[in-house]
Length: 244
Image 1 (spheres, rainbow, N blue to C red):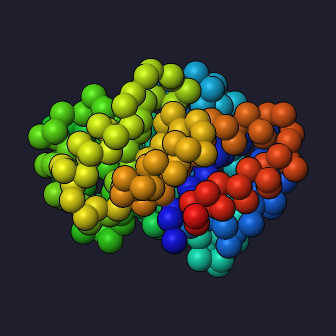
Image 2: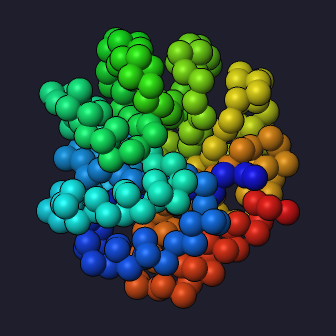
């Protein structure tokens, strides 16, 4: 079963609206769920998701979302945090304690190997020692040597962004992109995100060995519009395309 991973920034567009959408998710249609913890400097997100962090910082309340973390865990949907190291560096151990207490399976740290590369190995080893997954995030601009070195430190799935950041639309050659990552990381579980626009994009990614897709910007726009029916239809449609 190919992975379908919806992304939401906690607290956006507001707690009540997001809770309605989380209630609507058919948990048998998704595999993992990615929660963005609001950042003060979401520099590697594109304009649509970047603005969600500002609002999320105002609205996020653990007391409000604890029931959802419990809900997805009880329904066997693995939860991953997207968090920036710049936000959690000073309280890293406490934050990982918190995520593990809330039954998260792992963490995506988009700025770790870009802005804090010298600390990356220590951080990844620390997460490995705690039995907490570090999800490497790469993009077309990530050097081959870094992709191979960082991936060798984990056994987790890999998050590969087709664009440098969310909501950015730079032309790319899908076959070349997937061939490159397959050659660098043979046999690894590769989930693609950032710039998936069409059903055919998903079909071609899966045909070329992809393990799943992460969808963020499109869902964020649906929560902004309050498009609950469209949201359910879209999740079901994506599940159907992945299952073809």
